[in-house]
Image: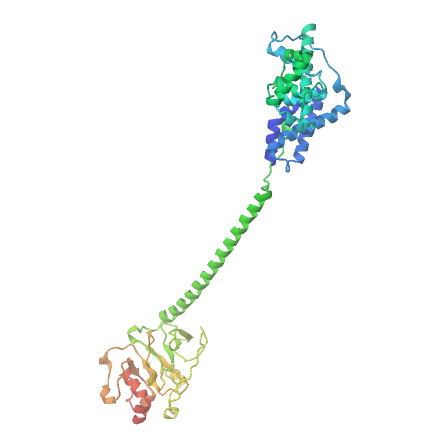
Length: 162
Length: 318
């Protein structure tokens, strides 16, 4: 990959990597640092990384950086807030549902959050997520199933409590 | 792989998303029939999908941008091999073409040298020409006035029809044979026929004598029987037959073509006529000394001169 192609990656993927990271750690400054580190690692390896695989390389790097950051910051598992909007299946507008989903997302485990973000935000296949996270494809399917099942429970609970 | 309560989760998402088919779909349906609680859970499960928040952007992209530099073409594997092979083939072709052009240039150069040499001999009229082995190369029809300051002596070799020696005098008016010659090529000294009786010409004038007369001279060998070839391009009014023997006569050629210039009839000279000779003017020569001609300049036909130079006729006259 040339330096020009690297710059294309910055313009195309920086926002998406940042969203993926900040949805996991909810710390904007740390999320920027992780994005910076991820692109710096890509730049160091840019001559050996093919342009077509740059996106996967970026998300893989960001994921592992995120894991390292999580290990250093146990606050990752803290549930920050209780959803203020109770969500019913078909009774909430788009913005309310969006906020509820984000709230439910934060109640998931790290691995569930990571794989479901890669699946829903970036549209990666189970196999691709397995490649990024380093876990098996079957495990990815299990984590995603559990993530959706938990979100359903959380949102249902929000609706009942709301 | 049979589906059970331990592993059913890895098939659950594909079942919910409708991605199971064939045997796996039948196995999943059988499993759900055996476990109605799980079937109810899946039927009531509402799938929520997250959407990316486009409002969240990374505002420090410029800090990640790197300066682009002209980079070498990164090639690998067979592409690199093909690239190197193509370059090698191109270089071989270019070198071959270059070498061929060099050979053509050499040929042209040698041809041009020959042409230039011939041009020099043809353009610059020489006041004196030395002919080896009695080669008659004069043709007075082409004689021009000698170029000023280019009094030269040219030696022409038999059967090669090329100039092998060009000798140039410093002063055109004072021609000195064999003085300060400009050697274009080593003159080929050819052995003159030994049939020339040198004792017949004890007072044969030498080039030095011609120098005293300040007149270009012709040194003609005595063996005229071998004069069978004639050069086409000789236009020099002064021709010298260069031989190893002593010249027997010194005459001056003049571009006089009119037979009316002959002041003395050839019959009176009792000389034979040879068509290969042109009009010549005799000044003070051995012929005069021998009493063949009266004093002063005489215009004779070259053929008569040839006849004079024939030893038998000369001896008879002598």
